[in-house]
Structure formats: structure tokens, C-alpha cells
Image 1 (cartoon, helix red, strand yellow):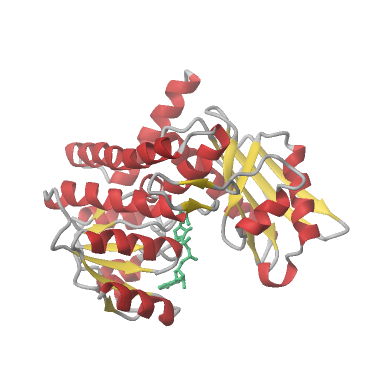
Image 2 (spheres, rainbow, N blue to C red):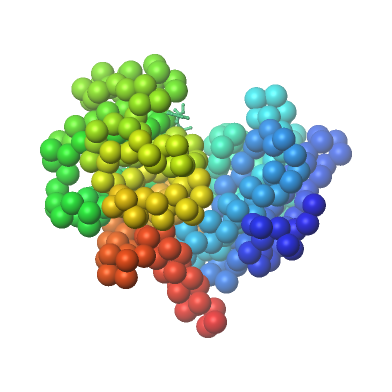
Length: 354
Ligand code: NAD
């Protein structure tokens, strides 16, 4: 397996292979870029079919974190850790501590957070052996609710603001009232986003492969319940992918009837060509790494010790950043995800003097 000529290799600073014989930990940490600050990004535990698949994931996701933090104006670089294994079968406190030691050996160049297959409790176990962990601090939000380390509320708030920016840019409407939004995935982010939108008078459709979760939300908010197969094709103004990646692919994009795609999921576009196709079809896409930055803002705040007011202010900034991206996209007739990458690169270059 080649790394320096790997299609996802993008001048990464470091790729670390971690192994612990006692627990059979097999893990990778990719540090993409630390010009803005320490590389921060979640730790994912996943039953990868091969080492090559894990390397691809770590390289790709760590680059995305550099772009996400740069665009959000955070003094953080991009990194990602992956543990090879099934979280339901192979996760033990000893394995978590072994991973914590691999992270600790990097001396703070990589700071970890939650991702798929990992919980706040797992992060606390990692935190027993390394201080380079975020997303485990309790504090009180500005609305008085308790924060237990879960970044989903900040992510949902950012996506809600991103939908407002998208609606203003594409439909020329300053308010969401009366619009229809279809949410794919009613998990931690999707259900919170739905509540924000319902409070604004939006007509909602929801779907989840766990039908009971979508049904409960539909009952709570008087939303329309759709099947997971039908949600993307719903006759809505906005489709909001809040489930897994690659929601927008050659098959699904043919079915879209919406004007806007704006959701929380990472890697919503299966390929860059899908983004170009959306743009050409007149569908405005809110780049995932711009709209879902609430989570990194929230966990990043714990690293730098920002207070809850500062987190709110920075999450609110997602609306302004997306407004700038869309303005440039329409001005230059370039898809928004390309503009977002350019903006992130500009911020990186301005800092590193390149
Ligand atoms: P979650 O696991 O709590 O919820 C995801 C939901 O999607 C689950 O209920 C799942 O059953 C459902 N789902 C999966 N496949 C589906 C399909 N084909 N159709 C319909 N529903 C489907 O995850 P989450 O924390 O809500 O995150 C949602 C997305 O946003 C993920 O892609 C995540 O990577 C991304 N994201 C989350 C955060 C955060 O703060 N939680 C931050 C940035 C990005």
C-alpha cells in the first residue's frame, strides 16, 4: 500500500500507526496540517475491511478537518484517528487507554474528540492517560441547559443557521416560515435541527432507517413521516442530509425536487462531480464542512477555554461564512464547495505566509 502517492494524500504532515500487543489495538492517526494550531479531529472506531480502507479514511477525513477549522476561523489544524475494530465487540477500557497512550505520545500535535463508534464515556477513558482530549467538559450553555460534552446541539444550531443563509441566497427569502424541509436522519443532530425549524414555522418531513425514532419526532412536531427511501425525493424546498455520507450520488440526485441541499452529514457528495451536477441543475448545496462546523467550534472551545457566549457567536458566524460563499459562487458561477475550499486555503495561506 502506497501512502505518498495515495489518491487521498495531500501533503499530510504525519501518518502514525499505533499498535498495542496486549489489547491488539490497531489504529492510525493522520495529521494533515498544523499551520493554524494543533491537529484536532474525532477518533472513529469502525470494522474496516482492510488497512487500506482505514488509511484512506484517515487521510481524507484529516484533510477535511483542516478545511473545516480554517473556514470556521479556529486556530486549529486538521487530524483524525481511526481504530480498526467493531465498537460493539472489540471495545474495552484497556483498548481505550492503549489508544490514549498512542495519542499522548504525539505530545499534543493531535487532539482527539468523538466520532462514529465512540462515546463521551470512551473519551473520558482516553482522558485517563492523556490530556489531549476534548468533548468531555461539563458546562452550562447560554440557554441554561447543561452541556455534557456532546457537540450535537452546536452542530444543529449551525446547520439551522446555514439553512437560513441558503434560503436567503437561493430563494431570496429572509425567513423560513412557510417553507418545507425534509430531514434525512433523526439522530442527535437531525432531531435538534427539526425542533429549531419547527419553532420557525417550517413544515417538516422526516425519515430514519430506525423508524421508531422518526415516528417519535413526527409525533412530537406534527411532521410528515416518510420512508428512508422517499425522503430525498420529497417535494420540499430544502433537503437536509443528517444521516451518513454520500447521500448525494448519481442515483439520488436524479430524484431531487428541492432547490437547496443543506444538512449536517460529513461527505454528503459521493464525488465532486455530484456537486457540479447539483450546481448545473440550479440546486444550491451548502458545503458540509462549512455548515456542520458547529461541532468543531464546540469541542475546539474546550481546548482554548472559550466561554458559552463565544461558542454561540462563532456558531452564528456560520451563517455569515455561508453567505460569503454563496455570494462568490453566484458571482463567479462556481459551485459553492469549490469556493469554500478556496476560502479555507486563503485562510491557511494568509496564516502561513504562503
Ligand atoms: P446519529 O448517529 O445520532 O444520527 C444519524 C441517524 O441517521 C441515525 O438515527 C440513523 O439511524 C440514521 N440513518 C442512517 N442511515 C440512514 C438512511 N439511509 N436514511 C435515513 N436515516 C438514516 O448521528 P449525528 O450525531 O446526528 O450526526 C449526523 C451526521 O452529521 C453524521 O454524518 C455525522 O458525521 C455528522 N456530523 C455530526 C456532528 C455532531 O456534532 N454530532 C458534527 C459534524 C458532523
